[in-house]
Image (cartoon, rainbow, N blue to C red; front, side, top):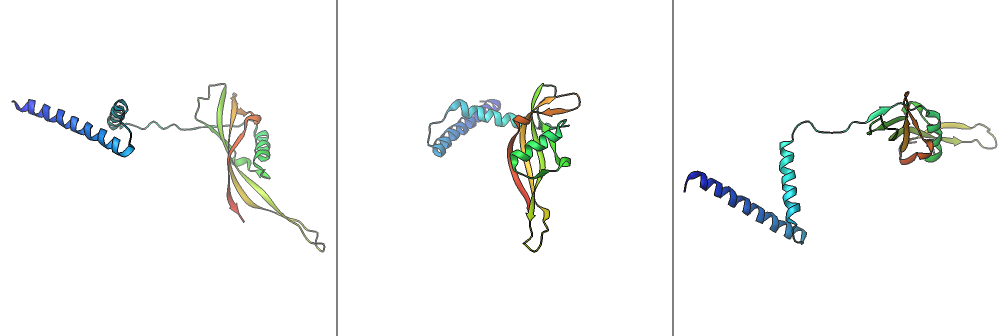
Length: 167
């Protein structure tokens, strides 16, 4: 036999041995019969991902300008149970195309709760100090306008409220 035929036969036997080992190990690990089409598809996807080493396709969020900030702040305060929200930290982002009429936005803001401590019968002073800071994350539906986005306040859903500072 020629050298080229020997190399081709070696590669074929190597591939068959590899596949038999893959099926056997799948059976041992999962204790189920292997699905050949899924295993071969998994191998093809793995090999093709090695050849697609170009720039990763990671979506970047679009920062949006909120038109109705005061309404959004009041809704966030009511739904999250905080006493106030810092307007400077209120942001909205989306991964969707902003040319659409309705888009889903992620809203983040910093909120706070006031600690009210009162005096006794001798003292009538009330000290109010901010001692709990929260990070609030919510989702909502927004309508795209020329100036930015108008968030539909009734669609705001709080996804997380994390306490950042508690004194």
